[in-house]
Length: 124
Image (cartoon, rainbow, N blue to C red; front, side, top):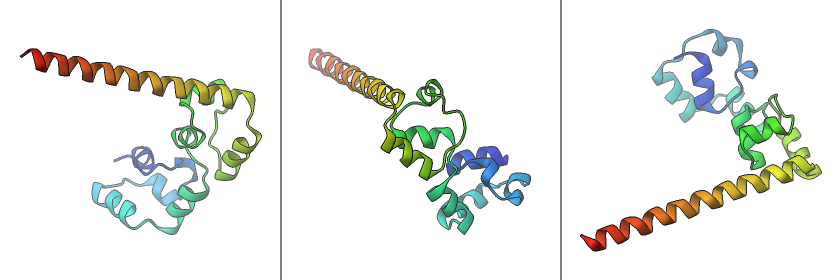
């Protein structure tokens, strides 16, 4: 697979990986080995970053679109993420509330669907 795909599966920011990783091709076996026994560079990236946007969004509790709305378009380190959590800018609070609402609505819809299926099963 391409290095970009492997980096995405590993949850790391491709430009921060070693050149040998960026320039090569990663087999499924190599990917499995990297996941099972991460080398120092992979452990360091996962712990300190820079992290790709999906990881940053998850750590902040917002969506990727919410990051963009907040002006965060680049990879962030763990230290920068923690600083944002401490600063609690207005956009972050707003996006966290939006994300909480989305999760709540998804749970509500899931529950409605479950109840509907139960009623249908009782009728049969």
